[in-house]
Amino acid sequence: MPMFSRRTFLQGSAALGGAFALGAGVAARAVASPDPQILAAQFADVRIAADGVTPKIMTYGLDDAPHGGMPPVLRMRKGEAYAARLVNHLDEPTTVHWHGLRIANAMDGVPEITQPYVYPGDTFDYVFTPPDAGTFWYHPHCNTLTQIGRGLAGVVVVENPEDPVFDAEIVLNLRDWRLGAGGKFIDPFKPRDAARGGTYGTVRTTNWQRQPTIEGPAGGLVRVRIAATDVTRIYTLALEGAAAKVIALDGNPVEDPFPLDRIDIGPGQRVDLAVRMPESEGQGATLGNFRGSQPWAIATFRAAGTSLKRDLRDIAPLPANPIAEADLSTAKRIPIDLTATAEHKATASICGSLGYTFWAINKVPWPGDTPDPIAPIEELKLGRSYVLQISNRTPHAHPIHLHGLSFRILTSNKRSFLLPPTDTILLLPDEQAEVALVADNLGDWVIHCHIIEHQKTGMTGYFKVV
Ligand code: C2O
Ligand code: CU
Image (cartoon, rainbow, N blue to C red; front, side, top):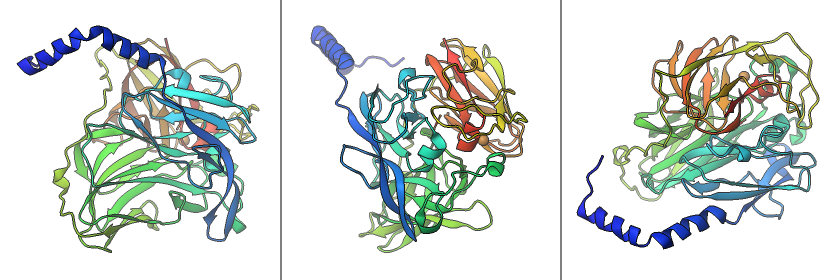
C-alpha cells in the first residue's frame, strides 16, 4: 500500500471537508444520464462496388437526417456514463449489442434474453458506463446475418485520458459485402458453406471503401485501431513499408507490446497498432491480408508533411483494464464442446432464421431467439471463478465470443504465447483451450460463434450469472 504523502493527505482532508457537496454530486451523477446520442438505424443507397450503387444498405446515422455512409465511430470515455437512443427506421425489428463492453445485462442488446425487440418506428435507450478503455464495436443482435451483412456494424472507441498520446489516430472497419452484378445484394449465404467455414463476401472494404489510402503525419506515431466486423472472414494482417507494434488485442492492452509480424483476427476481433509512419512525404505503407494464396491490400497509409522524427520506443504501454483475475485454485471447470450436428430442423424466429441447423454447443443446437429459450449452459455464481474447457471438435476455425465477461486464455494445444484478456477467442480447427474468468457481472450472457452463419445455425448458448 502506498504511503500517504503530506500533499495527498491535505487533498484528502480537503475532500473530506466538502463531503456533503461531494455526496450530492455523486448522487446527482448517478441519476442524471447524459443526453443520448441518436443512433438512427436506416436504409441508404451507397456505392460500394465498382459497378453500381447498392440499394437498401443498412446503416446508422447520428440524427434523424438520412445518412449515406458507414456507421459512425462512437466515442466514449472509460468510467463515464454514455447514452444512445436507438431509433428504428428499418422495416424489421432490431437491437444494438455493444461487443466487448462489460456493461449491465439490460443494456446488452440480445432480444428475448436481455431486452424486447425494437420494432420499426420504436426506440430503445441504452445507458451505461464502459469500465474498460480500448477498441470495441456495435452491431444488432437480431436477424444478424442480414443486418450486419447489409452494413450495421460500427466501431466503438473508449478513450482513457491516461492513454499515451499519439500524433494521429486511424480507425479501420474491415468487412466484405455479398454483392452481384450492378452492386445488388445477393443471397447472404450458401447452406453448404454455412455448414463449413462460412460464406465469403464478394467485395472487400475498409471503412466502406475498396483499398483506401489514408494520410498520416510523416515520421509520426499513429494509433491504428482495426476491427474485423465481417460476418465470415478471418484476416492475417501484416504491414509493409513501416514498423508497427501490437499494443492491444480485443480492446485490452498488451503488457509488453511486440513488433507486428503477422497476426490473425477473426470476425468480432480487434487489434490496435502503434505505427511509425514512413519518413518522407508521399511514402506509403500497406496493411495487407496475407491469408490464403493471394495477399491483397486492406489500406495504404500515406505519409504527409515534414517528418515528426518520432520513434516507436517513445510510446509507453497502455494502462491495463480492471479485469479480475480468476482464482484457479477454486475455479469450477465447465466443458464446452463445439460440434457439427445432424439435426437439421430450424425454428422460425422474429429475429430471422437461416432455415438450417448445422452446429451445436454441448450437443444442444440453439433454436433461435425464441420466447422460451433453452436452459443456460451453466449457472454461474456471482464472484466465483470458472475455467471453460473449450474443445473445437470441427475442422473449421470458430471465433467464440462471450458477452459481458472477459476471459483469459490459460492453455491451448495450438498456441503457446500469452495474450491479454479477451471477449473473443479465435479457436483453430481441433483446438482445445482452457480459458478462465470471474463471473462478476449479473445476468444472462450469450456465448456464440461470430461467424454469423454458425451463430444463426446452432452455435450459440448462454450462461446465467446469479
Ligand atoms: Cu458481436 Cu453476440 O456479438
Ligand atoms: Cu463458427
